[in-house]
Length: 304
Image 1: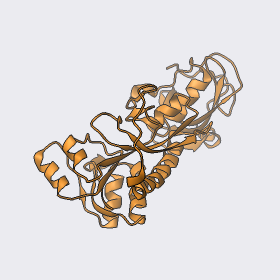
Image 2: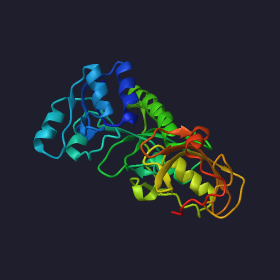
Image 3: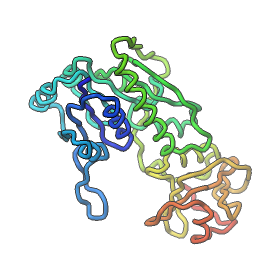
């Protein structure tokens, strides 16, 4: 098929690769404009933009698709379908209607649960046992369109957003190739009204750890916000991110370090901090981190 691909972050790259490997013609790639990044704050193309350049595919980076000119340029591509995954712009109706088979979205949740911007984070933070991927026929509402294909997977007990992200990205790449291969034979299922939840964009204010919460909730916060923005606490005036954890046995005043391996008491139970990152440094497993920082047993970490 002749495809327009619309995506921006790392999550979308495996999908672009899968479409190319499956033999589809990519008429153009749409991605968010380059943004300042790195120490020099120079404009850096998105991961999808960089990959499309490497593949020799035309890349377009409009700041909006609402203008008549942008819509005419899109329609002129005469695409059979558009594949959209974590693109970052709202698609006006004229864009949704332009491809012969419409616009297909890869969404990393089991719709109608976790419509919106941060479905992977929210699934872990809420303690969901499962999540998955839906291939959805796009319409004007926020992730409200009928679902063409879906597949579920179990969330690991110690899985982080980064780890789940990679598994779902691979699943989405496989499912969209399957969907395009049988597009005329698929039945679109309207999403039920029951069970709708919204995955609000992650606010950095959510990232400070409140040790007074139960251990399972603290653990889910840490894993759900890993690697970005990273749940954190302060120690001797320095912000320390926690990028990995698990629930362990233990009790004490909330925020008290119970062991040299950084088991920390919570409001109920305790969590083991397994991977940490000091400001300005790389992430380290707890044993390596402790050789440098040495947070002693009995230390009371500042409450959130």
